Length: 192
Image 1: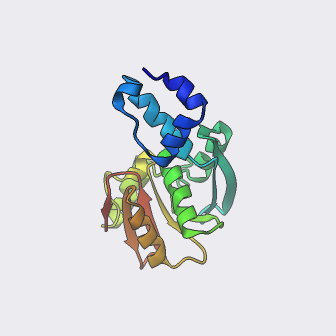
Image 2: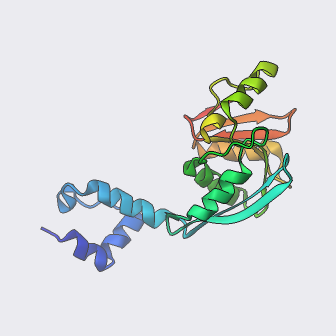
C-alpha cells in the first residue's frame, strides 16, 4: 500500500491534487475527507481581501480577512462592524462564505474598488419594519443571519454585476434596478 503522507510530501500527491486527478480510493482508505480538505486548501487563494464602503454610515474598511485559508479574527471584527445593522447598531458574525463569495465576485469582475453597501446585517426588528413597508423585503431574509448583502460596485454596470454573480452559481442573486443594487446571499441558488 502507498503511504499517503510520503506521497504528499514528495509533491507527487500535491501535483495530482492540483490537477484534479483522482487516485484510487484504496490508496487513501478512510482519509478521503482529509484528501478533499487538502485539495480545497490548495485551491484557496493565498489572500482573501475585501473593501467596503457603507453608504449609510460613511464608513469604509479595506481588510485581508483570510491568509492561506486561515481566518484573521481582527479583520472579521472590522467587517462585522461595517456590515452591522446601522439602524440599531447591532453586530453579528457575518458568514465567511458570504465574504468568500464577494472576494470571488470581485476577482471575476476584475475590480479593486470597495463594494458599496446598501444593506448588510439586518436585525429581526429592522427587517420586520422594512418588510412592512416593502414587498421586496423577505420576512425570513438571510440578511438576519449575516448571509446576505445588497451592493453596488462603482464603475460596474448593475446588469453586469448581476450577470457575473448569477454565473458564479454560489447562492441567491436579486436584481433591484430601480433601487440601484444587487442582492447576493449564500442560500440556495435562485434568481429574481
